[in-house]
Amino acid sequence: MARLSALAGGLTATIALLTLPAVAHEHPSGITDLVTPAVVRVEAVSHVEITLLDHIGELRHVERSYDFPLGQGTGTVVNPEGAIVTLTRVVRTGEDVAVRAANKIFAEHHDVKIPQDAERHSLDDPLLDRHLKQCYPPKKSTATCIIDVSTEITIFPNVAPADTDGFKADLVKAGSGPDSPAVLMPIGRAVGSVGMPTAPLADKVPDQVGSPTSVAGFLGRPGPDVQNTVEIAHLGKGGGKGDTGRPFADPEKKADEPVKLGGLADRGLIGAPVIGDKDGHVIGMLIGGGKEAKMIGVREITAALTKAGIAPRRGAIDSAFEGALTRYHTAYYTEAAPGFQRVLELYPGNVVAAELLKISLAKRGGPEDAGTRRAGVTPASGGTPLWPFIVAAAVLFVAAGTGAFLLWRRRRTPDMPPSPSPSPPAPPPVPAGAMPQPLDEGADQTVVVRRSAPLQAIPQHQPVITAGEPPVVFCTACGMRLGPAHRFCGYCGHPAET
Image 1 (cartoon, rainbow, N blue to C red):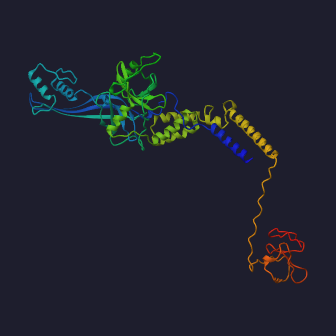
Image 2 (spheres, helix red, strand yellow):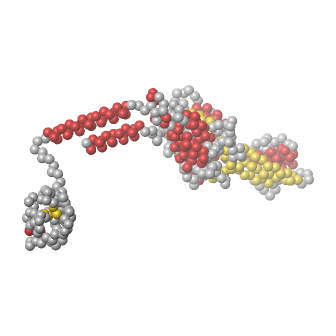
Image 3 (cartoon, rainbow, N blue to C red):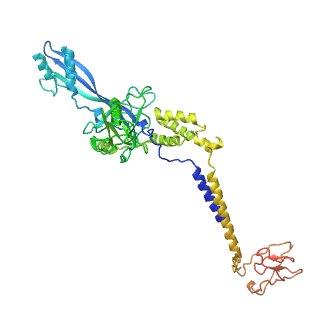
């Protein structure tokens, strides 16, 4: 029966484990919530300080300051310290902004028509033309302009309320081409007391043609009127190494995905993370524009981070957020709500966590809450299924029948002597002269017994008669005093036959 009890206990535990909620799972198809908290807006400008030395008339120094936009796009935070990957074209330009500043200051000061671009131009007036050419870089001893150029990169995180000022970042490592990854690091601070939310990077790009993905980014600075944009796409055939990228293609040919994504890239989605549909990890970055948008793979991203000496990793915010997200996507809203509250304690501006917390609180304890259904609060139609209990009862019935049959067979087996019961251990021998004194059972005087032979020589069960009336009997095994009516020794259990 002990075996049957153990079997029943094991089956009960197994059924209980099967009916518990799952803690780990693969995220639902198309999930982007793991990545979107780590998506940021990146804006870069060239700041030019220029001084024009006007020698034509009276010597004058004309000072101007210009900010020329370099690029704008989307970046992804890859570690809690705020390291960001984006495209090189977003933070660096191939045009010479010093030439552009020279054209602008000359046109303003001398009131002449010069195109406001980064090309070198000529003027009809020979004197002005000579001064203009001497203003262009590189700097010479006869230069008419002193120019200082610096790049200013501003990061606008996905937080609420919106950070209208953003924070500055340095360009740590630029790529070899405009469509290669660039690595940025914040100057002085990262948002949040324990850093920033990060996006998980995948190990590789899916090989299967038509694999579904999502592209997430910003078409402007994050705020109440500008939410993150998420667009679905599919991987096309071939390509994918280096700056050449891998094309997009809709397997059902319902949309021209390169054109659709190219338009979004031109509006600010350039450099956005491409998110795999399987587990919600970043598999690449959006490149291109116009009518041809592509994706560079995650290996190019990790290679750029390695060259910059930066290791991608997750942080405390990500651990709390992913745990809450798992419960949210399995409809355990009561359990998800405290997790999202913890995320907001660590990173108060987390827009995604705040929105999911709002939904979790609204559905907590309701008919959609799996935790409530499991506790039996909702009607039976939404409760735990009965089939695990039916299976358990059937298994226990079969086990009980099998045990009864084996017990019956055992009793019917002939010539099977019963197992002997263990006999009580024999008392240790009492050495001569060290016999314990028997307990006094009512005698009013001490009787001294003298023996002419040692105790071991007295036959077993032979009573010892002492002087005086009535005779006093002692157990020959242990020396315990026996009463007149005692048939067994009260100390060791041996019979006291006379």
